[in-house]
Length: 387
Ligand SMILES: C[S@@+](CC[C@H](N)C(=O)[O-])C[C@H]1O[C@@H](n2cnc3c(N)ncnc32)[C@H](O)[C@@H]1O
Image 1 (cartoon, protein in one colour):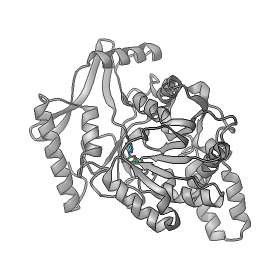
Image 2: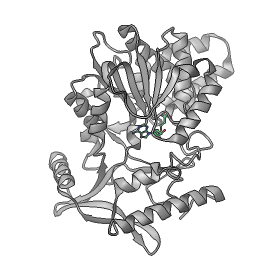
Image 3: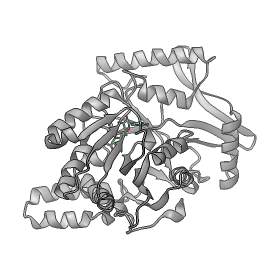
């Protein structure tokens, strides 16, 4: 079923479905879910992040923290400045920069703090997103566009500075599975006449071992369905390997493993977004809706630890922003007498901080290498016992 009434969008989705159909046929009628998610999000020219239809903001499908205003970026700038200050100099490398609004607002905020990085690099896998980022930077931070460069891959020689990603880990394709005491099945996509539909097959050895271990550890009973991101540990290790000194910072919605695979979360965390409406159906309008899963922050911590990094902290977004001085920014805005601006900022702060909004579901975690002092952002609350 196609959710859009825009003929161009429908054409894109239809072409993507045709491509996916061909892949299902080539793979004997079963496409593993992670391969489907990869195509639905990143198929060149057709996938959700690659087809040039803008997913962000009021007109798009969802609003990320930096899309709701500049408060998030101004807080994050305090964290980044605390690292660049210790290093003397360094680069900032943003992963998956979306519309580019966070890059633009961060550069403006770092200028105010007198801590502009030598280079601001963006590693973004979608060419359509890169083009949007260039335009946003030209519009919102014209003075700093020359400092920004786009990388095709991680730097070959490790850099010193800050590597960070906001809502990127949740956009990595996941494997889906169904468990019950009789065994483990992998979920994937098949064809039902001409339509895409869910199907399952016995899990391979790797998936089976991984899921059985989770089932034992968290004492699942009855039927349990969830997902896991097989690519996450290698991704984190490669990011860690790219950092000589500095901070690796990941912000996203997610849980420590015990909460993620809690026996009561027996339907997993996969969720789709189309025009600000959430659904559980990943086969609706392929290419026109976001598909995402919550992040296992324990997997991030294990991989960073394996790579020899030191955990700086794991905390909720609300407590991260507090430790980065969101209260002081609000106080200053209240004192400058512009009531309309203050009300706008208050709404933004509520959205970022309230437990029912982004405050608790979203987390921040940081790992350092070669830093002597603590990093701003992790002093208000320490949730590492949940990892
Ligand atoms: C949900 S958006 C978040 C955008 C932005 N960080 C924000 O907070 O508004 C995910 C972004 O990450 C990009 N992306 C996904 N996987 C990536 C990867 N492995 N490396 C670099 N970029 C990636 C997507 O193309 C998209 O721009």
